[in-house]
Length: 439
Image (cartoon, rainbow, N blue to C red; front, side, top):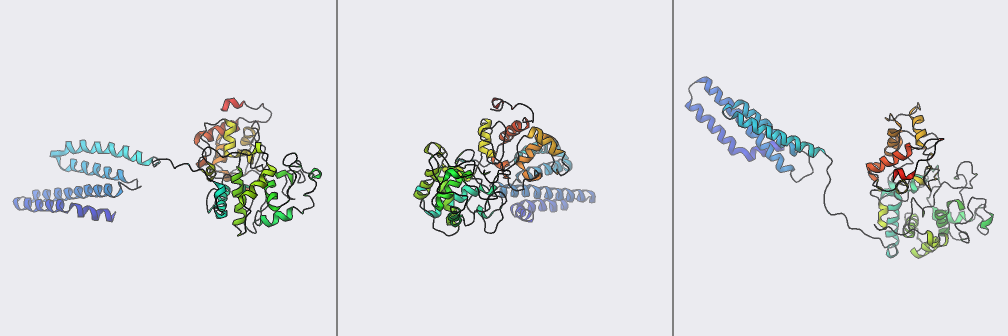
C-alpha cells in the first residue's frame, strides 16, 4: 500500500501542486474567515480524492498484467471518490453520484469475475507419443517413476500415486513395513531368491496350490529374476508371498490385480519402464528393454497385450481420468476403482484391497457409527466425501492412506456424481440396477 501511495504521489504531484496553488489564490482573495475555512476544507477533500484517483491508477497499472485479483479495488476507490465529490461539491453532485453508481456496478461485476476460479487460456500441449524402445535406461526409469507415482521425483512424496497404482499396497523404501503387499525395495535381488522358495514350484507349475497355476496354459514359470517380476505382474496369484494373500485363502490367492488388464492396463512399454525403475533407482544395471519385453511376452498372450492409447503412452503421467461422459463401467475402470474394490454389477471389479462398495446399505450404517467424524448427513454426501476426502472416515480393518486423495482433481464433477448415483443404488437384498440407466 505504501508503494502504491508513493507511486500515486509521483504520478499526481502536478495535480497536488495545482490544488495547493488554487488554495493560496482563493485564500488571498477571500477575507471572510468562514469562506477561508470552506476553501481550505474543499481543497483538502479535492487532494484526498485526487490521491485516491492516482492510487487507483497505480493499482490498475501494477496489476493489469499480473495474476493478482486486485483490479476491482481501483473501481471501488473511484466509486468512493465520486460519492465524496458528489457530497461536498454540490454544483457537480448529481454528475458525481451518477458516475459513482456506474463505477459501483462495474466494480461489482469485475469483482465477481475476479472471484471466480481463473483458467489460463492457450493452446493445449502437443501430444507426445513416447518411444520407450529408444530410451536409455535412465530415461526409461524416469518414465517408470511417473507411471508408479504420477511424476518425476514423486517417489519421495508420501501418498503420491500414478497410473500404475502400485503405492496403494506396496512400499518402496528400505525398511518400510508394508501391510498389504511386499516391500519392493531390493526386489531385483530378492526376485532370484523367490525362485528358490519351497512353494514356488518352478519345475512343476501344475503342482502349485494357488488358485492359478500358470499365467496362461503352457506359459510355464519364471526361470530368471526378471521373469519372476514379469510373472508377478501378469499373474499375481501364480505365486503369493507368504503372509500377503487374501484373508482366508491360506496364501493361495493374491489381492493384486493383473496390471496389464483393466482398470490399470499398462502397456508392455510401460511395464518395461516400471521394471527398469526398480533397478536404476538402486543403482543397479537393468535388463535391456528387449529382455524385459521378452519376459512379459512369455506370460502375456499377444491378444491380451494392451496397446498404447491414442493420447500416447505419456497419458500415464496424470491428468483428468474421467469426464463423466463415459459409460458407467468405463468410468469405474478409468478411475481405477476395481483395482481395490469389489463393486457389484461392474465386470472385473473384484478388488479386495478396499471395502465392498455396497454403499446403498453401507453408507447409512457408517453415518451412525460413533467413530464417524465427517460432515456428511446423507448417503450421497457420505459417498462423495469418501471419494474426495477418503481419510475423513476409514472403514474398520482397512488402513488409512491407501486410497488416492486427488480424485477431486482427476475426476470431473459429472464423473463423481455418476459414481455416487451408481454406488448409492447398490443395496443388500435388492436386484442390481441396470447399467443402461447410468450410461
